[in-house]
Length: 283
Image 1 (cartoon, rainbow, N blue to C red):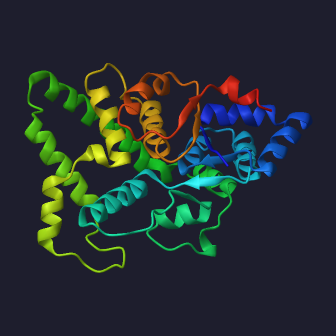
Image 2: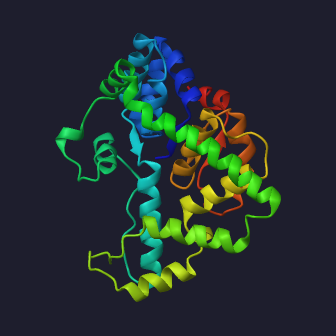
């Protein structure tokens, strides 16, 4: 059953088409047959709440849940799993890969650092209504957008002036991985500091799916013009999270089209890129 991740524009187009009874019937039939599993993330809900039109936002949120989707873990949670499994491979340990998709409640629980529980089974419309009614709750994201712009401009300047050396990149990568690593075995037994030190010393981001893709996008942006706006940041979060773990990404976004060949070169891209019109023609 192919996992199909729709970007926000593709989701909206699908929702508009699904207002027609015949189209909705065909869509529901394909989902019921298992020929497609829709995949969404918390970023879809954040984008859905980025409006003053409460009625349209609620309609879209309810449409998301009506598709009986599976949900992609948040970017940081995926990165932690990717690093953890790379560490276990370094230790030569057997382990079972954990899925990066699951129920909405499991994803929300992971965001809160907790195990899945009924209290996290919150309908999508509740999140959207809350954020539209209390936009200040998303202030932390607005700060992240601003910080991303500042950091990206500074990095581009460092690359241009030769200050971004290979040694500096290596040390930055190691510090980033260290911040994601939980030094335990699959059985939750603590690993000694020497082994952790050895792993950090040898770690290669090219072997860690989400980090390899993030690095490829970052290097692409460092040498390119643009990419500091809010939409590009959200697009990057979509790409990093989804590309290694879904079968298709539906998008006509220019940023997606531009960086897709770049990230394919990492060898970690599972997804194929499908145009909105091609996807909608299936129904």
